[in-house]
Amino acid sequence: MRVLVVEAEELLADMIAAGLRRAAIAVDIVHDGRAAPTALRLGAYDVLVLDRDLPGLHGDEICRQMAEQGLPTRVLMLTSPRTGRERGEAPGPVPGADDHLTKPFVYEELLARVLALGRRTRPALPQIIERAGVTVDTARRLAVRDGRPLALSRTEFGVLEVLLRAQGAVVSGDELIEEVWEEHTSYRTNAVRVALGKLRAKLGDPPVIETVPDAGYRLGEGAGTGGAAGTRDGAGTGGAPEAGVGPGVV
Image (cartoon, rainbow, N blue to C red; front, side, top):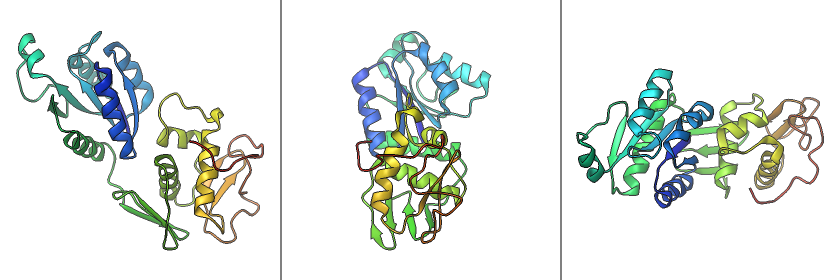
């Protein structure tokens, strides 16, 4: 899931983002309302956490523009009773928003609402996915291979989930970036290859993640993968070898 947090209070925005990231959600942050429309058009976000009382462009106007453009992003509006009374805004649901939460709020409540809105944005997906002896439970954030628990970072778990959902189809590096990483990450940063190197090491042998030259990556069937159609260590999009891929910091 991808979430955009548009919040004028930098500390609050950082706290929200940190909590969502702990729940394996990719998060980007914007502090000025004027930057929000462009970010929404380019980011393909599932949920927008939107401060109503924004500098530059009011939250209600952002919602209006989203409706005009037909953006599918769900909106959780954060409202302030004090500023609302000062502006003469009516309490309760906000026009154009899918849900609203009044400040101050309990973080667990915000997370529950973001997850609920995310489920409304995307079609229902199976909670447990399995292929080649690898299983992930997306609700409990658990991953195992042949009964062996895997200690995965948020990024590694996200990559594995995307590959499992593809069920053997090739996933490009750019698609992985779009699904798992946050804004301003480019395939050229080597982030995908580093993450895949760490994930492959944790999955162990026989290798199940194949690199398909000039195409991307796929999850094979375990033993016997990496033949003519794919390799373990070749490049996924440019054809050059993945030299030096291994444990590192994502």
